[in-house]
Length: 109
Image 1: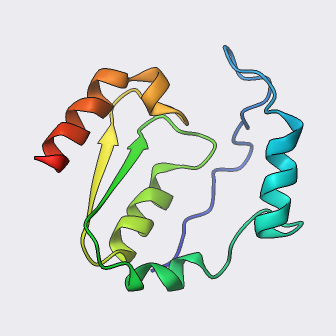
Image 2: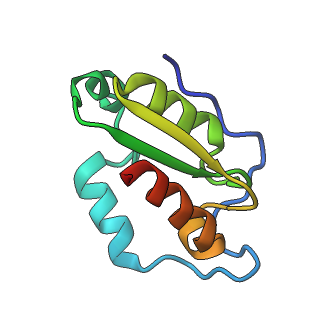
């Protein structure tokens, strides 16, 4: 499984309508966990070891981390279900809460 590349020029969270810059401590925390590149190149390879059921929710309109990443993560997890939240962006729980809760209810049932 390989991760897709974000589209060229994809906007980040800062400056997007209705969003504000993330707090400085977020970047400090990410740097501590992931190093200066702010990614974890070994994550995808570790996911097959997760043996519990997993629900991967992703916003259909996420331009920060495109839905292809969510699909790749779900494909790498042995017992995962992928649900694309229509109209959701990078924070679908805030943008499309009823759809997120419906997906959670279905998964947990």
